[in-house]
Image 1: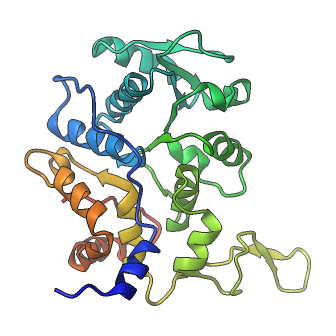
Image 2: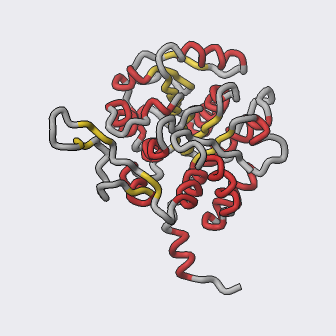
Length: 295
Protein backbone atom coordinates (compact mmCIF):
# COMPACT_ATOMS: atom_id res chain seq x y z
CA UNK A 1 0.00 0.00 0.00
CA UNK A 2 1.41 3.39 -1.05
CA UNK A 3 1.58 5.93 1.74
CA UNK A 4 0.17 9.38 1.12
CA UNK A 5 2.59 12.04 2.47
CA UNK A 6 -0.14 14.68 2.51
CA UNK A 7 -2.45 12.43 4.52
CA UNK A 8 0.37 11.84 7.00
CA UNK A 9 0.91 15.60 7.20
CA UNK A 10 -2.77 16.23 7.98
CA UNK A 11 -2.80 13.42 10.54
CA UNK A 12 0.19 14.97 12.34
CA UNK A 13 -1.73 18.27 12.57
CA UNK A 14 -4.91 16.68 13.89
CA UNK A 15 -4.15 17.24 17.61
CA UNK A 16 -5.80 13.98 18.58
CA UNK A 17 -5.24 13.40 22.27
CA UNK A 18 -2.14 12.78 24.31
CA UNK A 19 0.03 9.77 25.07
CA UNK A 20 2.42 11.18 27.64
CA UNK A 21 2.01 8.68 30.47
CA UNK A 22 3.43 5.30 31.41
CA UNK A 23 2.44 1.69 31.99
CA UNK A 24 0.53 1.28 35.28
CA UNK A 25 2.69 0.15 38.17
CA UNK A 26 -0.02 -0.75 40.67
CA UNK A 27 -3.69 -1.68 40.40
CA UNK A 28 -5.87 -2.68 43.39
CA UNK A 29 -7.63 -6.01 42.95
CA UNK A 30 -10.68 -4.58 44.74
CA UNK A 31 -11.40 -2.22 41.83
CA UNK A 32 -13.98 -3.38 39.31
CA UNK A 33 -12.80 -4.15 35.80
CA UNK A 34 -14.30 -1.01 34.29
CA UNK A 35 -12.58 1.07 36.99
CA UNK A 36 -9.26 -0.64 36.26
CA UNK A 37 -9.75 0.00 32.53
CA UNK A 38 -10.49 3.68 33.10
CA UNK A 39 -7.53 4.09 35.46
CA UNK A 40 -5.21 2.28 33.06
CA UNK A 41 -6.24 4.52 30.17
CA UNK A 42 -5.74 7.66 32.28
CA UNK A 43 -2.29 6.55 33.45
CA UNK A 44 -1.13 5.70 29.94
CA UNK A 45 -2.48 9.01 28.65
CA UNK A 46 -0.70 11.03 31.35
CA UNK A 47 -3.11 13.91 30.78
CA UNK A 48 -6.76 13.05 30.30
CA UNK A 49 -10.32 13.32 31.58
CA UNK A 50 -12.72 10.71 32.94
CA UNK A 51 -16.34 11.77 32.61
CA UNK A 52 -18.05 8.95 34.49
CA UNK A 53 -21.58 9.14 35.84
CA UNK A 54 -22.38 9.33 39.54
CA UNK A 55 -21.71 6.14 41.50
CA UNK A 56 -19.14 4.67 39.10
CA UNK A 57 -16.15 5.13 41.40
CA UNK A 58 -14.44 8.23 40.07
CA UNK A 59 -12.78 8.81 43.46
CA UNK A 60 -11.12 5.39 43.37
CA UNK A 61 -9.97 5.91 39.77
CA UNK A 62 -8.44 9.25 40.77
CA UNK A 63 -6.65 7.64 43.73
CA UNK A 64 -5.29 4.83 41.55
CA UNK A 65 -4.01 7.38 39.05
CA UNK A 66 -2.43 9.51 41.79
CA UNK A 67 -0.79 6.51 43.50
CA UNK A 68 0.75 5.38 40.20
CA UNK A 69 2.12 8.86 39.52
CA UNK A 70 3.66 8.96 43.01
CA UNK A 71 5.31 5.57 42.52
CA UNK A 72 6.50 6.44 39.03
CA UNK A 73 8.01 9.83 39.88
CA UNK A 74 8.76 9.40 43.62
CA UNK A 75 7.25 12.85 44.04
CA UNK A 76 3.95 14.03 45.62
CA UNK A 77 0.64 14.35 43.81
CA UNK A 78 -2.11 16.82 44.68
CA UNK A 79 -5.88 16.24 44.48
CA UNK A 80 -8.08 19.35 44.25
CA UNK A 81 -11.64 18.97 45.49
CA UNK A 82 -14.66 21.12 46.31
CA UNK A 83 -15.22 22.12 49.94
CA UNK A 84 -15.94 19.27 52.39
CA UNK A 85 -14.91 16.54 49.91
CA UNK A 86 -11.30 16.20 51.14
CA UNK A 87 -12.35 14.06 54.11
CA UNK A 88 -14.17 11.74 51.74
CA UNK A 89 -10.95 11.11 49.81
CA UNK A 90 -9.08 10.30 53.01
CA UNK A 91 -11.75 7.75 53.97
CA UNK A 92 -11.81 6.31 50.45
CA UNK A 93 -8.04 5.90 50.55
CA UNK A 94 -8.19 4.06 53.88
CA UNK A 95 -10.78 1.68 52.43
CA UNK A 96 -8.41 0.62 49.63
CA UNK A 97 -5.10 0.87 51.45
CA UNK A 98 -4.01 4.15 49.83
CA UNK A 99 -2.52 6.77 52.13
CA UNK A 100 -4.07 10.20 51.55
CA UNK A 101 -3.07 13.25 53.59
CA UNK A 102 -5.05 16.46 53.92
CA UNK A 103 -3.01 19.60 53.30
CA UNK A 104 -3.78 23.23 54.07
CA UNK A 105 -0.92 24.62 51.98
CA UNK A 106 2.83 24.74 51.64
CA UNK A 107 5.38 22.24 50.39
CA UNK A 108 4.68 18.54 51.04
CA UNK A 109 7.11 16.92 53.52
CA UNK A 110 7.50 13.69 51.53
CA UNK A 111 6.22 11.88 48.42
CA UNK A 112 2.59 10.83 48.66
CA UNK A 113 -0.97 11.82 47.83
CA UNK A 114 -2.23 15.08 49.30
CA UNK A 115 -5.72 16.50 49.06
CA UNK A 116 -6.98 20.06 49.46
CA UNK A 117 -9.83 22.22 48.19
CA UNK A 118 -9.81 24.62 45.27
CA UNK A 119 -10.06 27.63 47.57
CA UNK A 120 -6.59 26.94 48.99
CA UNK A 121 -4.77 26.44 45.69
CA UNK A 122 -3.04 29.82 45.98
CA UNK A 123 -1.16 28.47 49.02
CA UNK A 124 0.65 25.84 46.91
CA UNK A 125 3.56 25.98 44.47
CA UNK A 126 3.13 23.99 41.26
CA UNK A 127 6.85 23.16 41.24
CA UNK A 128 6.39 20.96 44.32
CA UNK A 129 4.11 18.48 42.54
CA UNK A 130 4.49 15.80 39.90
CA UNK A 131 0.80 15.67 39.04
CA UNK A 132 -2.59 17.11 39.91
CA UNK A 133 -6.09 15.64 39.94
CA UNK A 134 -9.04 18.01 39.58
CA UNK A 135 -12.06 16.35 41.18
CA UNK A 136 -15.42 17.74 40.03
CA UNK A 137 -13.53 19.52 37.28
CA UNK A 138 -16.69 21.22 36.05
CA UNK A 139 -15.74 23.80 38.68
CA UNK A 140 -13.56 25.38 35.97
CA UNK A 141 -16.17 25.31 33.20
CA UNK A 142 -16.63 29.11 33.01
CA UNK A 143 -14.14 30.60 30.55
CA UNK A 144 -14.13 33.98 32.29
CA UNK A 145 -14.02 32.51 35.82
CA UNK A 146 -11.15 33.34 38.16
CA UNK A 147 -10.96 29.74 39.36
CA UNK A 148 -10.51 28.45 35.81
CA UNK A 149 -7.67 30.89 35.24
CA UNK A 150 -5.97 29.95 38.52
CA UNK A 151 -6.25 26.19 38.00
CA UNK A 152 -5.17 26.35 34.34
CA UNK A 153 -2.10 28.39 35.21
CA UNK A 154 -1.19 26.02 38.07
CA UNK A 155 -1.40 22.98 35.77
CA UNK A 156 0.38 24.55 32.82
CA UNK A 157 3.86 23.12 33.47
CA UNK A 158 2.83 19.77 34.99
CA UNK A 159 3.31 16.64 32.94
CA UNK A 160 0.61 14.57 34.68
CA UNK A 161 -2.94 15.90 34.92
CA UNK A 162 -6.33 14.27 35.42
CA UNK A 163 -9.78 15.86 35.26
CA UNK A 164 -12.78 13.98 36.63
CA UNK A 165 -16.47 14.88 36.78
CA UNK A 166 -19.92 13.48 36.01
CA UNK A 167 -21.03 16.83 34.54
CA UNK A 168 -18.39 17.70 31.99
CA UNK A 169 -20.42 20.37 30.17
CA UNK A 170 -23.69 20.95 32.03
CA UNK A 171 -24.74 23.98 29.97
CA UNK A 172 -23.19 23.72 26.51
CA UNK A 173 -20.59 21.76 24.57
CA UNK A 174 -18.23 24.73 24.39
CA UNK A 175 -17.55 24.29 28.12
CA UNK A 176 -15.43 21.28 27.20
CA UNK A 177 -12.86 23.77 25.95
CA UNK A 178 -11.83 24.83 29.45
CA UNK A 179 -11.07 21.20 30.32
CA UNK A 180 -9.11 20.76 27.11
CA UNK A 181 -7.09 23.90 27.84
CA UNK A 182 -6.35 22.84 31.42
CA UNK A 183 -5.06 19.51 30.09
CA UNK A 184 -2.87 21.25 27.53
CA UNK A 185 -4.65 19.67 24.55
CA UNK A 186 -6.10 22.75 22.85
CA UNK A 187 -7.00 26.22 24.07
CA UNK A 188 -10.63 27.25 24.50
CA UNK A 189 -10.45 29.96 21.83
CA UNK A 190 -8.62 27.64 19.43
CA UNK A 191 -11.35 25.04 19.93
CA UNK A 192 -14.09 27.58 19.22
CA UNK A 193 -12.39 28.81 16.06
CA UNK A 194 -11.82 25.29 14.80
CA UNK A 195 -15.19 23.65 15.46
CA UNK A 196 -17.76 26.41 16.13
CA UNK A 197 -19.07 29.71 14.85
CA UNK A 198 -21.35 32.37 16.28
CA UNK A 199 -23.72 34.99 14.97
CA UNK A 200 -21.07 37.72 15.17
CA UNK A 201 -18.40 35.63 13.38
CA UNK A 202 -15.93 36.46 16.14
CA UNK A 203 -14.14 34.62 18.96
CA UNK A 204 -15.78 36.83 21.57
CA UNK A 205 -17.41 34.80 24.34
CA UNK A 206 -18.99 37.68 26.26
CA UNK A 207 -22.62 38.75 26.09
CA UNK A 208 -23.71 41.65 23.90
CA UNK A 209 -26.43 44.23 24.27
CA UNK A 210 -29.49 43.80 22.07
CA UNK A 211 -31.51 46.75 20.87
CA UNK A 212 -31.07 50.47 21.51
CA UNK A 213 -33.46 51.31 24.35
CA UNK A 214 -32.45 50.99 28.02
CA UNK A 215 -32.17 48.59 29.66
CA UNK A 216 -30.56 46.59 26.85
CA UNK A 217 -31.04 42.85 26.93
CA UNK A 218 -27.85 40.79 27.06
CA UNK A 219 -27.61 37.88 24.67
CA UNK A 220 -24.88 35.24 24.35
CA UNK A 221 -22.93 34.86 21.08
CA UNK A 222 -24.92 31.72 20.20
CA UNK A 223 -22.14 29.25 19.44
CA UNK A 224 -23.01 26.38 17.11
CA UNK A 225 -21.11 23.73 15.17
CA UNK A 226 -19.62 24.61 11.82
CA UNK A 227 -21.21 22.57 9.05
CA UNK A 228 -18.33 20.14 8.70
CA UNK A 229 -17.19 20.02 12.32
CA UNK A 230 -19.66 18.03 14.39
CA UNK A 231 -18.12 14.59 13.88
CA UNK A 232 -14.50 15.85 14.00
CA UNK A 233 -15.31 17.64 17.26
CA UNK A 234 -16.54 14.50 19.01
CA UNK A 235 -13.69 12.50 17.52
CA UNK A 236 -11.32 15.04 19.07
CA UNK A 237 -13.10 14.90 22.47
CA UNK A 238 -12.88 11.10 22.41
CA UNK A 239 -9.12 11.34 21.90
CA UNK A 240 -8.45 12.93 25.32
CA UNK A 241 -11.37 11.75 27.45
CA UNK A 242 -13.34 8.65 28.38
CA UNK A 243 -16.95 8.66 29.51
CA UNK A 244 -19.65 6.25 30.57
CA UNK A 245 -23.08 6.18 32.12
CA UNK A 246 -22.96 2.58 33.29
CA UNK A 247 -20.23 0.05 34.21
CA UNK A 248 -20.85 -2.08 31.13
CA UNK A 249 -19.47 0.76 28.99
CA UNK A 250 -15.91 -0.08 30.00
CA UNK A 251 -15.90 -3.55 31.53
CA UNK A 252 -14.94 -7.07 30.55
CA UNK A 253 -13.22 -7.46 27.21
CA UNK A 254 -14.12 -3.92 26.17
CA UNK A 255 -11.65 -2.40 23.76
CA UNK A 256 -10.44 0.42 25.98
CA UNK A 257 -6.87 -0.84 26.02
CA UNK A 258 -6.85 -1.96 22.40
CA UNK A 259 -8.73 1.15 21.30
CA UNK A 260 -6.21 3.39 23.04
CA UNK A 261 -3.33 1.60 21.31
CA UNK A 262 -5.04 1.69 17.93
CA UNK A 263 -5.92 5.34 18.32
CA UNK A 264 -2.36 6.28 19.24
CA UNK A 265 -1.07 4.55 16.13
CA UNK A 266 -3.67 5.79 13.67
CA UNK A 267 -5.43 8.84 15.12
CA UNK A 268 -7.24 9.68 11.91
CA UNK A 269 -8.77 6.23 11.50
CA UNK A 270 -11.39 6.48 14.21
CA UNK A 271 -14.66 5.24 12.81
CA UNK A 272 -17.20 7.89 11.80
CA UNK A 273 -19.87 5.29 12.55
CA UNK A 274 -18.79 5.40 16.20
CA UNK A 275 -19.26 9.16 16.29
CA UNK A 276 -22.58 9.01 14.43
CA UNK A 277 -24.01 6.57 16.96
CA UNK A 278 -23.18 8.98 19.77
CA UNK A 279 -24.32 12.09 17.92
CA UNK A 280 -27.76 10.61 17.31
CA UNK A 281 -28.48 10.97 21.02
CA UNK A 282 -26.84 14.38 21.45
CA UNK A 283 -28.94 16.01 18.74
CA UNK A 284 -32.10 15.39 20.77
CA UNK A 285 -30.79 17.26 23.83
CA UNK A 286 -28.87 20.33 22.69
CA UNK A 287 -27.71 21.52 26.10
CA UNK A 288 -27.03 18.17 27.73
CA UNK A 289 -23.61 16.56 27.43
CA UNK A 290 -24.06 12.94 26.40
CA UNK A 291 -21.12 10.76 27.51
CA UNK A 292 -19.56 8.15 25.29
CA UNK A 293 -18.82 4.54 26.01
CA UNK A 294 -15.33 3.15 25.53
CA UNK A 295 -16.20 0.76 22.75
